[in-house]
Image (cartoon, rainbow, N blue to C red):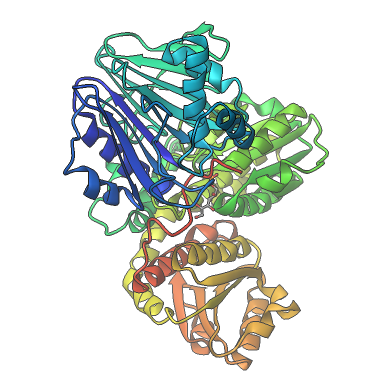
Length: 622
Ligand code: F6R
């Protein structure tokens, strides 16, 4: 939700800021803007409704000089997407300007207090209150920028990551955060600083990064060491981390869209995800293959004493959680619940100290998931994180956890993160099952052996891309879709439906196939595509019967089947085959055609696949 970039150093800031905004555009693209202090000390602010490219159309022909600048790409919360509501916002005097990611909950109160003191507001945003408040605080206390920001923030309720500059002090840039992410990259003995909402815009310049903690305020000054304060003004030592990001992951690598690249990246990133964890020891006695997860080894005691696991997550990560429940209950005999983080955080859930709460998140910044974890921690639970983004807030908040290591996911619709999460959940269920003695040696080895074959099998599914593209092109007329599956394929049905909704704007619902008779079947007619995920596993025959019910009502069926399934091929309009595998691993294969289907339907409809309307990649507001 909103991306922030800042730069202070000796190079022109404009190209750095624009490059950074493009990398953060996945966080929101309702409007974009930048503020640059030119060598004469003038503050140039450019803004545009829409994407960063619209901003570049306006700004590039204007004065874009200056080695100090801040920039923003917005996902609208308060106020419609418009130029007036675009950041940066400017103080009454025109000297101070600021970009913000988050929500100021008490903005209405602050705004009316400031209006009474003569401050005027030009936007409908909560952010404008912040910049006016900083200026008002400065006028009251006659303090420097960092102190004024710090004192102002003490009056703020809500979430913020901000970058602030003062035209009169072009030697410094001030940043702060609470509940919204912010990273500072340090370069060349502090000759320059790069600031961003995540490490992706910074990685090409440095691997030395400081992740701001809640209620920290930092001052970046050319040639000076980074200074960090808490809101009370006490100086804190910043913790510098070495973060190495694979920069090739941040480009489309020849694919037309990030989403397609990320779908095709899956075989390789799943190999990466297993590397060093699924260990092959061909000459050892037994087991030949084993799984080693540091989190399980180091926190064996907390995990073994768990009486219940509660998985909290949102969206696609919640779907992975539903698969995780089946895996953990099967291999570890541990009762498992899966909750939407947004519901769980406000529920009266009884949590005991021997409960383990597991948060699953690609971004590691989802506000509801974080709040659910905080609530669980307050009630004494042990918190385990399954996260993609290294160093993210959820990773840091977890008592322990496992990264999925699939590399940055840029396409707004999650693809490789889902399969990465499921892969980690399989490894975790096996490692824990082995530690508890609830999985047999034979099954453990069989599943691990098959898990290592999954990347090759995904490659076989991806070979059908062209066939799926042709099928997808015949579905652009549809207004509704049903996705049906059972057992391990039920969460896949939910995920397939979510993908289609997100990027094709076609209404789609996922259901356990047997539930169809209890209502959704009323929707079936010749216009209604029904996607059955009907691989050769649990309850296959019953799914075939459900298909007959749809066929009798002239519904149009696309079936995802196991290779060589002639029976279903005879019955239905279209089939896509996936290689045969174990039922607990089938989501890793059956989801692939559904990702490609939604991608191609959206492309056939001429839609913006990587940046679908109204969405943002990282949902840092509740
Ligand atoms: C769907 C999607 C979202 C996210 C959800 C949780 O394609 O991307 O539904 O899965 O917002 O995000 P994370 O996993 O970052 O917590």
